[in-house]
Every structure is written in C-alpha cells, then in structure tokens.
Length: 225
Image (cartoon, rainbow, N blue to C red; front, side, top):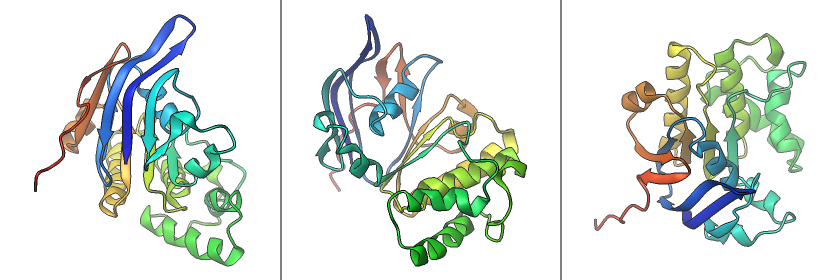
C-alpha cells in the first residue's frame, strides 16, 4: 500500500527526514513515533502530498507520488483521509455540514451525501447529532467529527497526526477504539503519536524516528503464509 525508498526531505541545509525506507501493507495499522522534531509530522505531510520529498521514491497504492505534479495530487487525496490534532472543524457549521464538506468538494450527488453522513456518524458514535453546532462539542466529540469527515469518502488510507494530543485519557482511549474499528473494516491506518501509554494499550507496529532517521520498524518482510 505504502512504499518509501531512500526518502530525504530537506529544508535549506536541515534534513527533516534522512534516507527513510519503509513498507506499510494494505489493511495494516501502524504508529509513527519519536521525540518532538523527529520527523513524524513531516512523514505524514509527505504521505498526503502537503510536502514533496527532496529525493527518493514514494509509492502509494502503486502510484509514484514523488513524480506527481500539483494537478495530480487531488486524485491521490480522494483515496486518503487525514485527521489533525486541532480538529480543523468550522465551529459555526453543524456536525453534518462539517462532514458533508468532504463529499461536496469532490462533487458527490446530494442523495449520496444524505446517505453517507448519518452512516459515518453512526460509526463514530454521533448518529443523531447532525444538527449540533461543531463549536459547542467537547474535544472528544470534535475529534469524532473530524474522523467522520476523514472517512466519509471511504478512503483506503487514514492518516492521523497526534489525534489524541488535545484529549484527556478516557477520550483518547475512545478515539483510539474508533480508529481501531476503522482499521478492522479494512482501512490502512497510520497514526503519528508520542503517547507511549496508548501504544502499549493498543499494540501495533511502531515506526520510530530520531533526528529524521527511521531507527525502528522500517521495511517488514512479507509473510510466507
């Protein structure tokens, strides 16, 4: 699903990522972890096309993203959902409107939007809250809406950048349970986090970065089964 070969990302004379090679299989759930400034967020930005690699090769779903121009990136992003630490909701819009926006921007038919929005809100435990204003929700509820918006297009890949960073312990566990359930439906889930407690509670493969280098969890051998 995701293949990176000798990826370098530089900002001037500073390398944010250095010679990174990794494989993530279809349907896998993994963590991208490491100390602050290690390259976690840069890694996710490369995956969803917000940044481009300085050198190296990056394949997502078989497409060579490292060679894509800006006109081709929207097609990549349609197959990918992204969840941010700060939610990025429109507070004066309703829950339903925030989720529907992800379908409206790709020109989905109105009847499809009307079906998909409540269905995906049901997945994150917010069915019936479509008319609530996003700005009055709790932090955990806002993150659930953000997750619903990210998966309403039924993406093959879900990227989550510190999705529990602004939540207390109980809410963080609830969000992780939702992400786990989404993964069990077949979505490849990549989570950037430094929360060791959550990673221990929900154990999946860890890609550990230190000073831009991938030091643990890179290319995994294929199963012989």
